Image 1 (cartoon, rainbow, N blue to C red):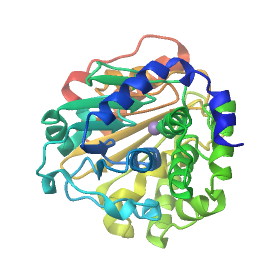
Image 2: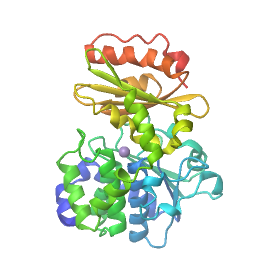
Image 3: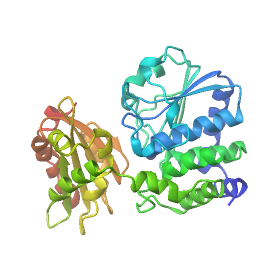
Image 4: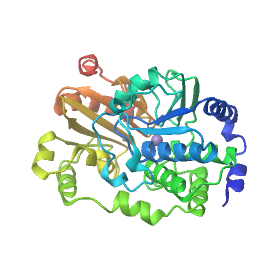
Length: 355
Ligand SMILES: [Mn+2]
């Protein structure tokens, strides 16, 4: 499928064509452009950001486009280091300029910009290209299409609208975005559009086997030992409808696994037969607990993430909380039980735990 076919499949940018044109005007008015995704970047954050910056450079070679990580002092997670352009990210504390345009990708809230928030705030103009449910708009051009399986889908759609042929580098980045956000095309968001875009990306030179090799078949032994610990702790309750597990900082020390390797652990929990909703808790430096929620069916877990001060999609959401893993379980498990049983949640302790 070529880009023309893709443009036909996405005739009006699924209703967002005017916003894409508004984004074009912001880009045309800018010289210095920063593209940045959310803190703790995943495959969609990195892939869609790199794909978008490469698209802008292809269409407007005179623009200076900078890819920024939201956090100071972090590296691109090693499984994503193969992405074309991944070696070119800058950190907020190493960037002294005032951008004409700051584009957030895969980011529903300025809160998740981490250290890059100050760079956005000093930018002359701002834009969002995202597929999370819109929270409070925080940019001049706010494109949130929740039906898109990944932010990378919106970037592919933008390329089609601009009529810019995808390079194999762009296609690889966008395919990584799509593969990871759909859980290898296994989640509920793996819709016809996701497959149509994937087809166009493979046509343009992306190699699915190569993406899979780096992202899913290149784990360090230390990480696999951590996986074994997390697997050993999988617990179900409410007749197996709820499953959870967790990872403590001491587990990292014990196995030698690294914090940035832990993002896929929630997917272990969701493999439990019969589990309708899943929770994975990860203890992080500074006494915070990062929570990942997943729904395998009809339940919408985003409300619980919101109640905990986080956000996300109905089938995949997250939050941060203070307290111990046990304390967070004491708060979130009753909410999950209320969700699957249809009853009211006990949120008595929520305020105390919110960050
Ligand atoms: Mn995403």
